[in-house]
Length: 171
Image (tube, rainbow, N blue to C red; front, top):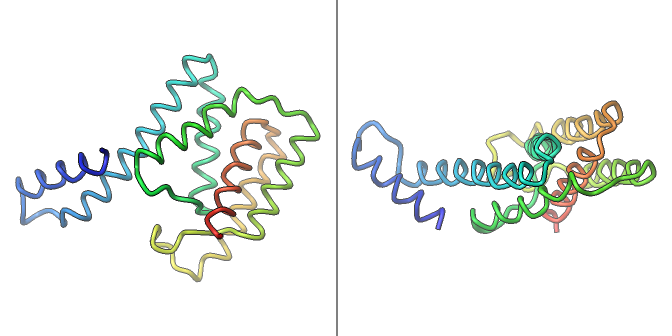
């Protein structure tokens, strides 16, 4: 659905200005990323607003996205599944209570998974050269470690879920 819509739009753009546009494939890929990002954000935030948890939902989205940028992770095969899957795992996070022990278990688990598996599934999905991958691991762990300052339950959950996607993509 999203892929075909992106293809139609990219084709129309190319037909409108064939000399000054990149290939249909490049535009389609960019549009899919744009639609997936916006779609997941809007759907997840809509749930957060309806449930009265807009700010914690936004924090979960941002935490997940920032860590994902540096650590990589699992990719769904379709854009629609990405939107639905991301929403399904991020939207509930502000509604999950986390006690002190669980906070430290989530944080420790996240750091361990990132130490073992980050970055993952970046080659082919990013233009970051491989020589920077060790730095991405360190930055990923620093991002998670920042939550020892903020002590946010939602961030701990978002980081842990993202760290699991990193481990899953390494199988």
